[in-house]
Image 1 (cartoon, rainbow, N blue to C red):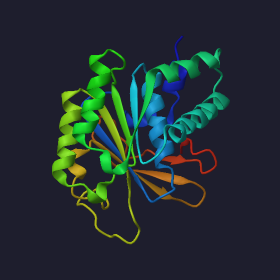
Image 2: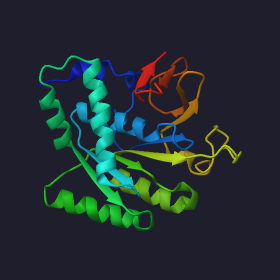
Image 3: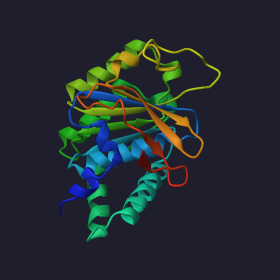
Image 4: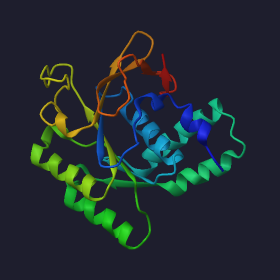
Length: 230
């Protein structure tokens, strides 16, 4: 069963994300503005295009991450007419695996070990990796370069979330705020969520795809946390 309309009509399509492996994306925002909601929509977009996604949740439970997918998928099914919704729900489950880590135990070595266990036993071979809750404030550049090397070596597309703070004024020359201002060059796409009057705006700080995003306007609906265009 094809889900092409869910892919082609997704507002995220204008960013041309997810076309190439060995790329890394970053979603930044202050706490509570919708980073996880956007990350899950990016993951679901990848799944709907036939990819397998590992969702790494740092410091949160599997159940909490699963609820995000259930809620976002529910909103997608409300907005789009799908002939057999239960088949879509089942397909998402088969193409997604949630993996949790304690904050103190996440590292490239531990992540690689767990991924290799899945791949070598032919249990699950991911195309896309999304990492929610990664602590950029206590991470040095070498550790991020190590993670990028893992993404490259496993031919993955990867997305991370990061919390930024209003009081921290540090920013990279390209406009990426702390705590990612010194590692921003490692990311191909950087999205900053900023509160607007009636919604949450997606500011595209960097997009290294061939797509021209200069006139693109995307936002999150604060009620559903779904991405909208215009």
